[in-house]
Length: 243
Image 1 (cartoon, one colour):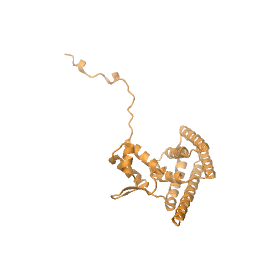
Image 2 (cartoon, rainbow, N blue to C red):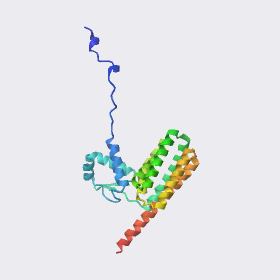
Image 3 (spheres, rainbow, N blue to C red):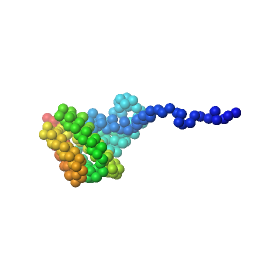
Image 4 (spheres, rainbow, N blue to C red):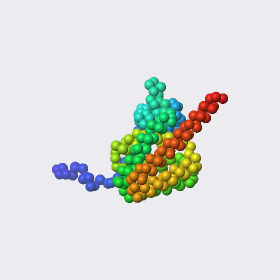
C-alpha cells in the first residue's frame, strides 16, 4: 500500500485566505471610556456608572473593571475601596504640575523627531494638519481636537524613543482632557492654528530646536487658556453659592 496517498497535501496547495482581524476588547474599551471622560460625558467628580456602562458596551464587570484600572493609572479616575470609581477633578495645581512636564517631553520629542522622521511621515503630518485646519474653518471642535491629538502623537512616534513615548502616554489622557475643558475664544483658537502652522514648517525643514521651542510655547499657551477657564468656573460656582 502506498502510504504517500494518505499524507496531507503540501502547504503550497492550501488556498490563501484573508488574515483574520483581531480586535482587542480591552484596548477598545479603555479607548471608549477614556473618550467619555476626556470629552466630558462622564463629568469630573462623578461616580462611574458601572452597570450602565456594561449594558452600553455589552461587556461584563470584569473587563470593565480592568479598563478602569488602566484609566486610574493615567490619573483620569480614582478607585475608591468599596465605593467603585470616581472621575478625577482637575485643578489649577494639577495643571501647574503636569503641563511643564508635558512641555519638556514635547520639546524633546520635537527635537528627536526632526532628526529621525521620514518624508512619508512628514507627508502624513501635513495631511492631518490640513484636515485639522478645515475643521477649524468649519468650527468643528471635536474633530479639530482629535486631529490635533493625532499630530502630536505622530511627532512622538517619529522621535523613535520608546521610553519617551511611554512617558507621554502616561500623561496624554489628562492633558487631552484639559484641552477639551478650555473654551477657546476665536482669537485663541486662531492663535493655536497659527502655532500649528509653525510646528509643520519646523518639521518640514527638520529644525529640531525650532520645533522644540514652538511645541513648548504651544503647550504653555494651552495651559494658560485652561487655567483661565477653571478659574472662571470656580468664580461662577462661588457666586452661585452665595445666592
